[in-house]
Length: 190
Image (tube, rainbow, N blue to C red; front, side, top):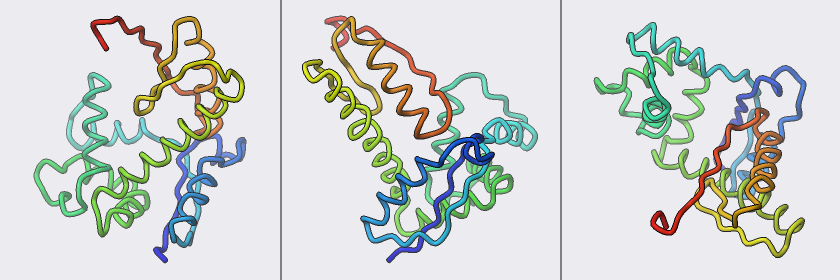
C-alpha cells in the first residue's frame, strides 16, 4: 500500500459551503489502486497568490494564459530533482509559498515524475467520460458525442446543452464554475 494524502484546493469547500465531492472521488479511485489514504485536507484556492509570489520573487508578470500554463506545467510535472536547476525558479517559488502542497506533489512523483500527470488525467477522464458523457447519454441517448481530451464534440444545435452539462458537472466536482468555450469546426479543420 502506498500512503497518500488528498489535498483539495477549493474556497467553497474549505469554508464549509460545499461538500468535497472531488476529494471523495479521488479517494475512491486511489483506494481501488492499493493506495492508503492517510490524510485528507481542504485548503482555499489561492492561484492569484501564486502569481503574486512569482511576481515578487522574479518580477515576471503573466501576460497570457499560455505563459501561465507553461509555468504551472513546469511546477507540477517536472521531476523533483529539477528544483535545483536555474530554470526551476517558479517551482522554488511555489515550494516556498505552498510547502505542504509541494510536499504532496513531490511524494506522488517520488518514484515516477509522470505519476501526477497520469493521476490528473485519470480524474479528468472519469469526470468527462463517466459523469458528463454518461449523463448526456442517459438524457439524450440518440445525441452523437465524441470526446477529445477534456472536450466533447457534438452536432450543431446541441452545443448549449452539452456545455451546460459539462458546466454543472465540473462545478459540482471542483467547486467553481469553469470557463468553457464553444468552438465550431469546419471541414478544413477536421
